[in-house]
Length: 263
Image 1: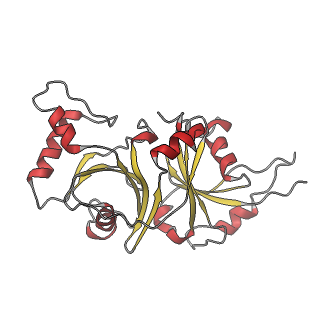
Image 2: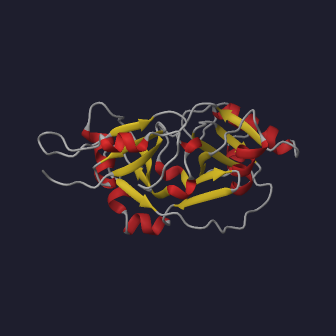
Image 3: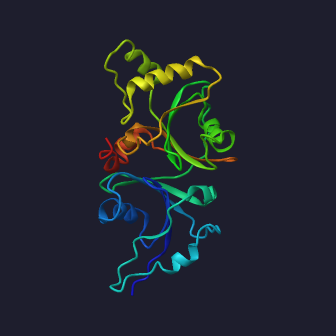
């Protein structure tokens, strides 16, 4: 019988789960999106996890022992280890590369890099929380401060760890274009443009307010990966892990086989 290497994957979107598999990352991406009727139909985000990672919350060794080939010799494609509170019990140092998967199974592999950007203070940004929270949030906090705020400074709107992204959204341009308009337009799907307009004005008018929740449900189901600005962040109280997207030129030229399916 064929020998297959075992892998650990943390699904980040559309659910948060820890999964064992004998599939390589790109094969896992295809299986989870187009290879099985039991699994999700749509975009997927997941990270490979160091196979040596252990936490008492997860019975990893038990489920890895069950991750064996089928009687016909085919690899075990998925063995779910946990589908609840996964990121909260994950060591961010165990995260390897992150994969953005289109609905037709094409995957873009991202490597973590130090986040060295110098950010303009007070600029209003639009963040989409990915997991375990799913809020769409406008905030005057930059990415470092937002991650710190969610994981240490607010209990009512926070979580011990979080994955989030930022949308490429020009607040000043949005407010100017929709001024005095009856029918407003927002490039972000699944939200009310008029409510977004009012909330942004409210946030800009109150220098004390740090965040304004626009929506409680995730817009990532309908939003294109092309709406993502910069990349993805994983934050813990004293950690920030950043997965940058390639430049637009790189997406157009080097990663076109993936990029052409995301718009």
